[in-house]
Length: 114
Image (cartoon, rainbow, N blue to C red; front, side):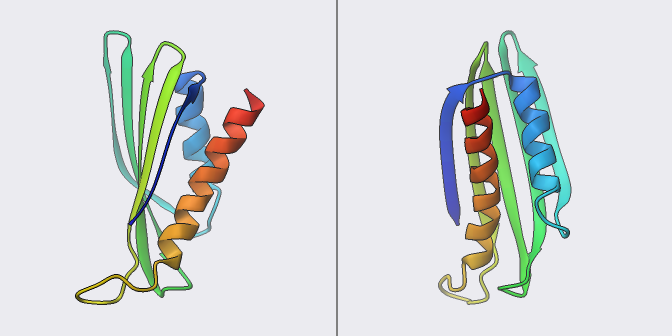
């Protein structure tokens, strides 16, 4: 499992669409598995789950992105899982780290452009 979290300023709806587009266009094997969105007062929450095939590991890995927004404050948490081929401990987590790097790059690019 690999994890990335960041708090920054931005437009929630714009960022949500941007990150989905960035992930979907980041790899030919990415699929959007499911998600959930809710608004409670001024607070918005979006959960997005993606999966992709990892050539390095020969398996599939998932990426869960949670976006929390209130006014112009945004918090994003991205967590990958899967990809290991061992039974009792994790080995070969390159696929997870590569998938997470795709998200990290997109978030950092969004922050630097706003």
